[in-house]
Image 1: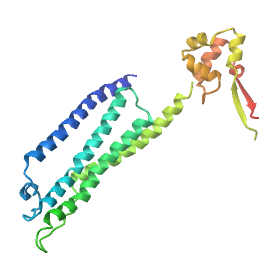
Image 2 (image 1 turned 45 degrees about the vertical axis):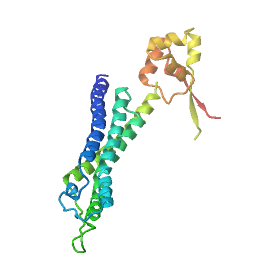
Image 3 (image 1 turned 30 degrees about the horizontal axis):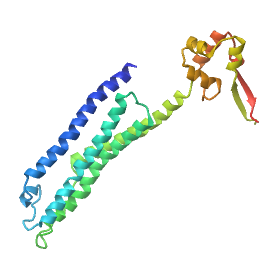
Length: 175
Length: 72
């Protein structure tokens, strides 16, 4: 009983933190978008953006950049729902197991989506360069690896939790 | 092999002992709702612990409460 109490107590705190992150993240991104001028220099990172890049290409690159925060927001929302269920004392349920799996998929997407979008962004932002100076960049960062492994782990835990919820459900049908 | 089902005869024992379901539920520490489900056989199983408590309160044997009958 005290374990369930501990889960509910910690989940309450984590739900608060998650909600705070869900509020802060969009504000920070909106602030960044409004204060940063849409210039090639502002988008340059480990590669040089073509100075002749069109406004449309710059906007497309920014939109592609927004995919990760959107996935993160969705994952945070699933985490908020999970912590909410834990606060209510619903722990070994099918609903919670499915939420854990969705969180895992969110983490996995945070690894896969940048891996796919990064080369597209580089192509977009260097397309205006003369032939021979255009580039494509494919890379795997430690962050991507971390999210991929964490996502895989969380999905597996979600499957295990689904098996546990089935056992708990069967146990409940015993008097 | 014949198909056999388990029939719960708890209502018969309760009638023989002139005991109400509510009193039995209180004595063995389960809810009336769960006892009602047990009486109607709508449960997947019964724990030995619960069975032992029922037998102790009703002063009977597990065989007095459960019966194996061939499915028709």
